[in-house]
Length: 400
Image 1: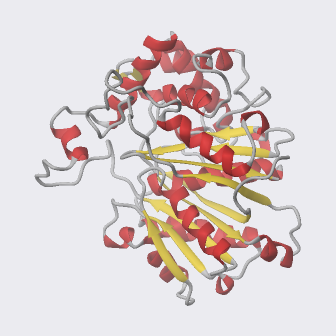
Image 2: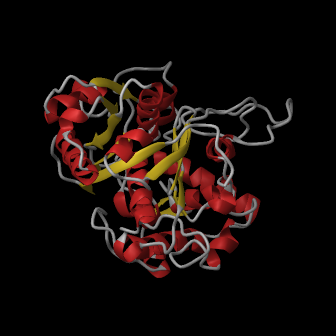
């Protein structure tokens, strides 16, 4: 196996609070997840030297200082703290900060936590009159809620590659078959293509069952140096072999809200790799691996159509062939490259600071052989993909 460009850290413990619409303080979900991860790692809270919190912007000031909020709720122990925000990529940004602390020698073991309590309905812009805020503008000037953005990408896929509404429905049906086996899923219910087709249109061509809900939930990791893992008697842990938080490069010719325009593809040649393609390219380069090494993937399916894009952007199939991969059953459990065995965001809903961490939790369970009825046989390498608005993206490659 080729050497990567970064030293690895170990994922010693993982934990989650089930997703739902619980209506309680986000701290409760984060603490539940962190305690589960500490128990899974067999690590005493007082041995933790760093707490890395993923920020939530919907829960007041405690959400902005989430690292300290979680540390206080767990019982201040003198650990250093940090809080990070990168929209839906916040969880991996928090993991990146923790990795840096561990590899620098500033600490041996860290806890990474993300949790959210979300309002009913669409995620809304910051209140007030904010004409210099592109996120505010996309709501107030063009009415572009998140489902509108998802539908634009679905229409793009239909125009470029011949995707059909049935393909989008097949993604939802596949993920629901996986999600029924996940005890942390908010919607552990199986749907078929007809169920999807009979659900209301939200933003053409996408229907209600193809767009993830907003949810409450929490996820946490205990990560550490390889030496610390060995000191605990863990000789073959799941390892973070690569991590990507790259930004777009000029010219960025594919529109991504909240930006309302792209760079010109006529004035300047587009880059060889688009933004989302570069997210996976970076994680593979760090890990010294490639798409052919991957056994299982967890990707960002805010809509069922977006999952198809990630097949190609992670190199799981050539451009334009995602639909064929799906139709052949290759992204289902039992296929060549199962995608979203957790059930994905369609089964969970969106809890922004937690979801990228939850992907790593799922991949860890898969690589340990602890995923129960959704287990991918023989999984040794897993990759995640996530996107946050404003040019954020993330990917983690874990191996065993």
